[in-house]
Image 1 (cartoon, helix red, strand yellow):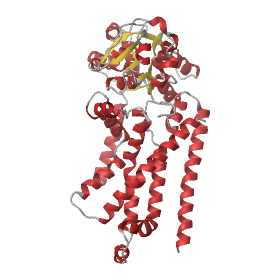
Image 2 (tube, rainbow over the protein chains, first blue to last red):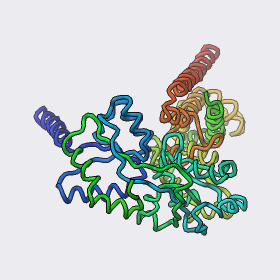
Image 3 (cartoon, rainbow over the protein chains, first blue to last red):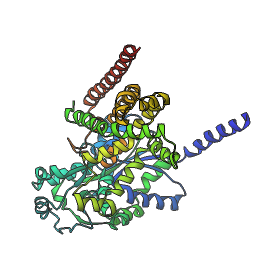
Length: 252
Length: 222
C-alpha cells in the first residue's frame, strides 16, 4: 500500500515537472481561434507546445499582478501591458504584433444591415427587433471598451442601455449571439471570422474610424523560459502573420 | 457600495425562498413518509445539484432557453418569455440549484416525527391539513428554518451560473457577487473590499439570527 502510494506521489510530482517545460501563456479571449491555429503551426515547426489561458485582458492583467505564473501575455490593447511595465512585472513594453478590428455580429435568425457605421441598428432597436445586444464587459475587456466607444460615437449608447448584456470577455459575448441568447453583438472581427462562429452568425466589419486602434500586444514576463521566448518570436514571423491576416488582423 | 446589486441579491434570495418553501415541504414530507417505485431515482435527481458544477446547469440553461430552438422558441412564442439574461431566469436557476439544500433538511425533520403521533392525531379525527399545520410543522420547523437559511445564503453567494447566463445587467442580473467580481477586475479594490465585508457581516448576521431563534424556541418548548 505504501509502495503504491509513494509511486503515485512520485508520478504526480514528476509529471508536473515534465509539464514545466510547457509554458503557460495568458491571452485575450478575442484571439482564441487565431491563436489556436498559431499554436498548431508552432507545434508543427518546433515540436514544442504551450498552454494558453484565455480571458479578458483586464482579468489576465489582474492575475499577473497577483503573481500568476504566466510567461507570456498577449493583450488586446497595450494599456494593460504598460500597467504591468510600470509595476516592473515585465522587462519592457513589449510589441504590437497586430491591429484588431470590431465586427457587428448577428445571429442568423436576424437580418443584418450591411452598413459599417451601424446605420440600421437604431431603427432595429426602436422597432424592438432586438431584445439583447451583447458586448464584452467594458470595465476590463478592450473590445468592450471599443464597442462602447463605437456606440457612443454613433449616438446609440443611451438607446441601447435597456438591451445591453455584458459578456465576461469578447468570446462570451460572441457565444451569446452564436447560441441565440442575444441577437447581436459588437465583438472582435477575429472571432466573427472563425468557422465555428460563422455557422450560426453573420458579421459586418465596423469602420475603424469609429474607435481607437486596438493594438494587439505581446510581452514576455520576467520568468519567461526558452519555449515562451521562441513562441514570442514565432508570433512575429510570416507564418503567424498569415494566420493573423486570415482572421482579419492587419499589420500594426 | 453597490446598493442596487445588494438589493437585487437579497430580492433573488427571498423570491427563491418563496418558491422553495412549499416545494421543500411537499417533497421533503413525501420522501420522508412514503415508499414508492422510483424513490431512489427521484432522490438522486433531487440531490444532483449538490454535486453538479454550476457551469453544467448554466450550459443547459443556455441551450434549453435559446430562443432559436425547442423549448426556448416555444416559450418565446407562447409567453414572450426569455429566461436567459433576466431575473426570472436567475430565479429558476436558484430554485434548481437549491433543491437539495431545501429538501434534505426538511426530509430529515419530517422523518424524525414519530409515526404514532401522526396516527394518533388522525385517530382523533384531525384532517390531514390540520395535522400538517398543528402537529407536523411545529415539530419540523427547525429543519425548515435551517433549510431556508442554507438556501438564502447559497443564493446570495451564487456566482458561476449568474456569470454564464446573467449578462451582467444592473438591477436585473448584476448580483452582489458579480458586482464584487467586476470591481476586482476593474482594479477597484476599495469598493470590492467594502462590498465583501458587508456581505460577510450580513451573512454572519443572518445565520446567527436563525441559530438564536432556533435555540430560543427550543428552550421555550422544553
